[in-house]
Image 1 (spheres, rainbow, N blue to C red):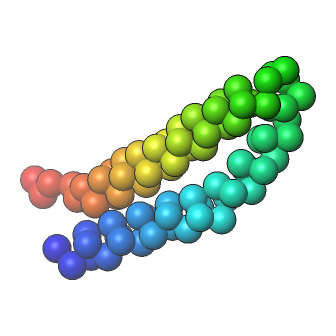
Image 2: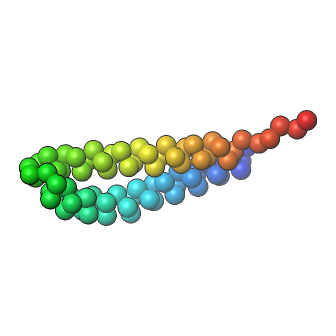
Length: 77
């Protein structure tokens, strides 16, 4: 049980670190691009926030799935 807990903490920890470091970088880069695409600056900021939330949810979901998948042990026959 301890190894399962350690792997869960590691996966979630890596996901949170990715969010902390890549989130602001993606927000700044995305804002510049989206201001070129959308004529309204407020609309570009809104879309950028939605994309950042989607990135956060996807990252945490993938970490959760990878953790669940790695903690499954094969049954003995």
